[in-house]
Length: 135
Image 1 (tube, one colour):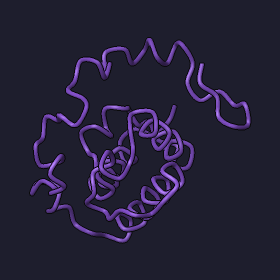
Image 2: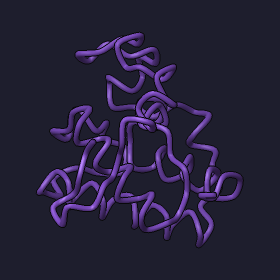
Image 3: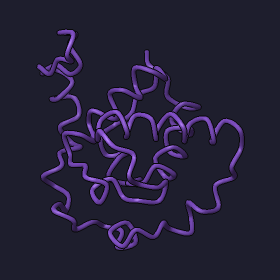
Image 4: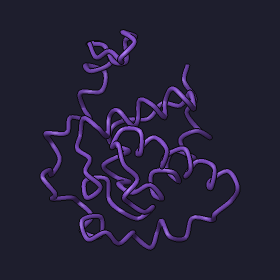
């Protein structure tokens, strides 16, 4: 069981088993990603076409705030991959937990690995918020 600094349960054994098919050991790690553009810091064209609406802009601000809180600095831009900003898998999980709490949206860990920048993650979270609120 994982608890936050107040002792509240964030992730229990049932949640872990439920999402075992999303095991990070099955995916490339240590900088090797399925999308080479994520490693280089360039974002994929498919994400650059995301319209910047007020809701996407607000979501970008929330994602950026969660990164700053977890990483402890703001020395990155919206297109910097999380790993290059100093993050790792545990910190990525902490970002998703904070966003889940703020937004009330189910956010699988895989989302972070598929969308490693603030800009990409904000667009993905915006889509998830529209389709999968917490039960």
